[in-house]
Image 1 (spheres, rainbow, N blue to C red):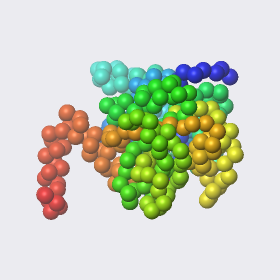
Image 2: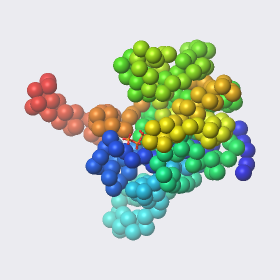
Image 3: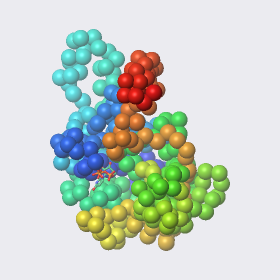
Image 4: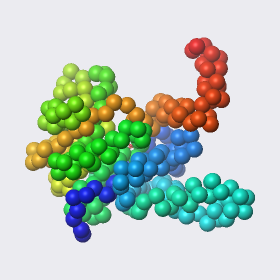
Length: 296
Ligand code: UTP
């Protein structure tokens, strides 16, 4: 095991059941669902690479084999693309296998997000590392992960991504009690999972990007399992806070959620409209469809 202070490893937990997407996720990974023409997990890997990460561990499970195939070579397909002269597509599929060093480990029992991250301990070793949830990604313009890694380099501590949400939405997220250091940087004094709006310490929700010091692994081992035997990441972060400072970087927009059906649909529409080659025709279709359904 080697120790570094430089952050070059990311862990992507992608082993969940995706129950909010059944029956689509009965036999396939939620993380492989397409947003326009790329699976969600590819956006996440590209986001990691853009932030300087070159070693990625994806936590997978049963029904997740296609994630491994997606980042592997596929010689039969490559041969067919060569023979039909589809050079652009060929470059794209070949390139996927060399985006980063991508490793896979299975979670086995699905005992929650905290447990999925604990499975990465052996691979990560005594190093700081990034965690990127497998069902959301950030627009490149946010530069969020790079900023979080810089904050980690400055303070040597864990850093969470925080976004302000509407009061009635806070009960869906982990919520931070903040002490503001500067415009976008805060120190986190406390963290609670899914609080009722009346009990929430702020409207700052923890989003699915984290930089952790390796001490989080000790805390994950100490967390008592909650409902359904799940190990909650928020509980481990709360324990970490008692020992060492934890920071938060706030960001405004550019987060794409794919974990629920409404959020997934919104993400597809946004990204389709961002694509120049689709914007006009798809935009016209949307207007026409809204009119047809009496919404415009
Ligand atoms: P979610 O709770 O959003 O995903 O976890 P889920 O469990 O797949 O979805 P639902 O609630 O059943 O619809 C966030 C991320 O953590 C991973 C998921 O794959 C997702 O990318 N995860 C969750 C694990 O890897 N292991 C788990 O035990 C739980």
